[in-house]
Each structure stands twice: as C-alpha cells, then as structure tokens.
Image (cartoon, rainbow, N blue to C red; front, side):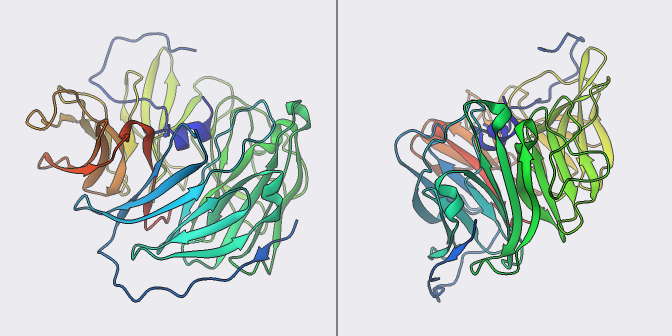
Length: 396
C-alpha cells in the first residue's frame, strides 16, 4: 500500500496510516515482505469559534459516489463545523494513488472541491472560495497551505496508462491570488513524478515520497527528474527556494536495515516509523530534523500506531481494549476501556498531546484521554468509512 493510501487511510483508509502497531515484544518473525485563477473569498463570520484544537475528519474513505464531508471535532467530542465537497474524478493511471484532499493551516482547513477548486472551512463554520487551479482538470493535485495562510505549495501529477510516462510539476505561490510563483520542479518524469507537498515546517516544505521514489541525497531537483531510486516511502524536508534537503525522514537506502515507512499521521514533532532490523520490526520516531529515537525494539505489525504531537508517546493497538500507549523509554501501558467497549478501538490520531481521536464502532468515533481512560463519543454514522486526516492547527 503506498504512502498516500496510508496518509488517507487510518480507519487512511489512513484506520491510521497502514502501520506497525505496538504490542509487547513478540518473538522475531519474518516480515511480509498552468496558471492559477483566483476566485472571490467569503467574508469571515463574526461567530466566535469554539476553543481549539480540532481533529479534521473526512468521510467516504472508500471514495465512492460523488461527495465527501469535512468535519472539525473538538476535545469535547462536538462536531463544530462541517462542509460537503465534490470528489475529484478518477484520473487515468496504474498507480492507484489516493491523493490527500485537504491541508490544514493554523486557522482553517482547506479542501479540494471537485477537480480544480480549493475552498476553506473555519472552526466557526464559515466556508469560502479560495482559488481555482486549472491544472486539476487533467492532473491530480497535491497541495499544502502554509500555517499563516499566505502561501500554497502545489504539485500537479499526471498519470498515464504507462507509468514510465507519468509526469509532474510543482510550485509555491501566494494563496488566493496565485502571484509570486516559485517553481519547485517542472519536469519530473516516470517513477520520479510521484511526490508532493503535505505540510510546512517553518519555512521548509515537507514532501511525501511515494514507494520507490526518492530525492538525491543532498537536493530535491528543481527542474530535472529524480535520480536516486530506493525502496520504501518517506518524507523529505527541503528548502522551497533552493531545493536543498535538510532531513530525510523514514527514508534510507535499500541496504539493510531499511525503513518500511512512516506510520500514522505526521505531527508537529515528526512521525512514527517502521524499520526492519534483522527479522524484527522496530518502532521508531523520527523528528523533522532527522533525529531518530527507538521506542520499541520489536513490534508486531498491526494497524493504528500514531505519534503524539509532542513526540513523547505513540498510541497503538494492544491490550484488552485494543489501545496501548508506548513512551519514549519503551514502557508500554494498556488503557482500560472495558467499561466503554469490548470490541476495542482503533486510534486515528492525536488532537493534542493528551487527547486521541479513535474509531469506536460503526456509528461512533471517540475522543479518548488515555491518562484517565475517559471516553467521549462522537456520533458518526458510517464511522468505518471515515478517518482523521489532520489536526487543526496543522503546523508540522
């Protein structure tokens, strides 16, 4: 399963990125193997927004039919804002990429409405037209809005029936007006085409790298195809002006040990990662600086590992109620949710350092405080077809 399927299928479809979950150490086993057209922006509502932070939840993880919903859920389990958008049409190609549909800044979530239109949803419930990207009519759009709502990074990926003829181009420009464009690359081809921005870390961009597509060791190309092809998926932190890579996250060469890839949602600290070490799978955390820290020496593969935004603990499947917390010293604690559920939960992601959003059952998600085992249900019909896509504020 590719990285974007992971990023979208936590439930994301990212139940969390298809991931290594955590459990008590198990006996080693072999792992299975064009221009931008601005549109009018609505006047913000005077209605005060509920206290942040929020989980950004998307419905229709299977992408059936024509629409999906964007929901903002607060720490009290309330759906404080909702919008409905049109799904982009399926583009030609064999990669089967599931491109992220949203990007969160510090103040709003931006979402793709149809093939070309970017709109915003604020916690007060206000929706607004932001801009139109004509290239989305024929290409798949991957975009990331800066935390201050001033800039947008866009990759336009064109898939062909012959993957060797896939192509992409990417740029950064002013949000809304499309002015002050800076090109990131114009002619990525074939296997090198499948990468795109998923967030900002300060003034740097974070790219998601699809399987078998990596930047060269020191630089992401600004106008040429990638030249280094390795196993795995990962993230690159790079300067959007020079292309210089400052960190390669969950991404190594194809010599052992190598990364299985990122697991769970990326956070302000970094991301949890699976890494093959001999015949065991290590659960590690890698920050956006590239610094790595081992959490579990041996973790059985499962769905649901996700890193807290402060980088101190990982929530994962485990324990009698299906939820366990592992801390940076390797301590694993089962969370007793037996009074709430006997079926177990699937952690989707952290809303803040002390609250999780998780799948509870077919009709409910839940905000969980793992320290107190407090559970607040979030009524969500067809919860099995929903997932947490980001948190708001969305700075990485």
